[in-house]
Image (cartoon, rainbow, N blue to C red):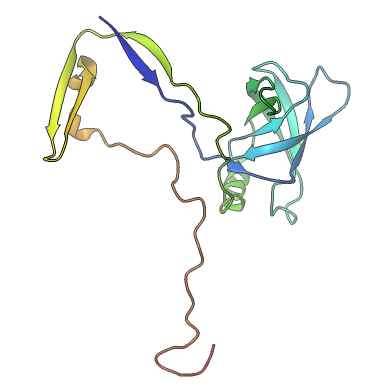
Amino acid sequence: MLQAVEILPNARQTLRRSVKHLESEVIASCWDDPRKHRVLDLSEHGMRVAAGTRLSRGETTLLSFTPPGWWVHGEVTVFAKVVRETARREGLPATMGFEFLDLPPGARRELAQSLKGFPPPLPSAKRRQKKDLVWVEVLLTYTEDLGDRVNTFELSERIRASDLEALEPEPLGGLITGGRKPYRWRYDARSSACR
């Protein structure tokens, strides 16, 4: 039978971080000169920029930018592929999303470390839930009585074939964007002197 399923939006590898006052030079084969774009958000796997002129998906470009806190390391130059492009809407700029192709693992770790503490971007608008039809042989219904409420959910027969106890739900992204430094006591019980 055909069953309507909800498609989860924004299933990403890593949490994107909102950055301000950061620009990136984008070099594309269809442009004569490099063009500067304002970076809207950044992660160790890619970036999203505000774009006056959009490139087509799948096009390979060269990005050059200096991540926040990298004044010692200097500029990063990396090949990237266009994976998303959105048109301008309701006062929001057109955007392009890039995936880094050849960022070395050490630079990737350094970039992730330098982005700690930056908040994720605020959602621009409520997205409509996408639904699709999927062919399912048999749906199994499970009911869980918690006393104050009853949860009922349906699973496909294919999921039933695996061990349900082995399924471990995991969050798609981190809940905390940056930790505070631990509190440092000014006085110690062993001495009354200030540190």
